[in-house]
Length: 134
Image 1: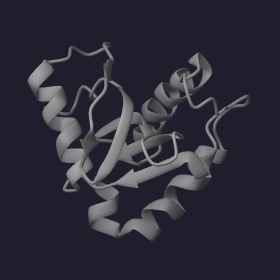
Image 2: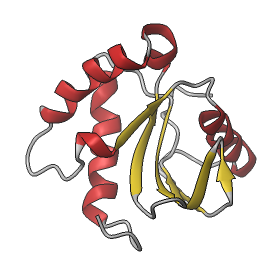
Image 3: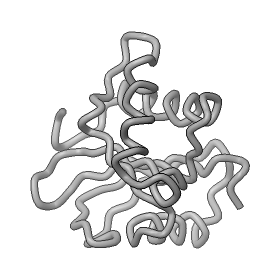
């Protein structure tokens, strides 16, 4: 993936995925693309309570078949997805950013900072919180 820009196909596919996952029984609290400082790569983060309740390995085993079942073309590589639980530092930071900016449903946030949780950050594209999330 281009390390300088996040292409429209990936942004659109991220939106499609986070809309579809809850329909298939995989809860999503928040989602965002993050360009990591250490390698300059973009990763798609999904915050899900499945990580805290089921454990990371089981949550990935549930997620990957759902990603592979997305209608094609679908540009997100399952290996670019990072799952985190709502209690993780990075999830807490993202939820705080959403709270501070009071983003409305349908709006996205582009954010640059030095660190989120324990991850060095170049740039972040935050999707709107799902409507069921406070």
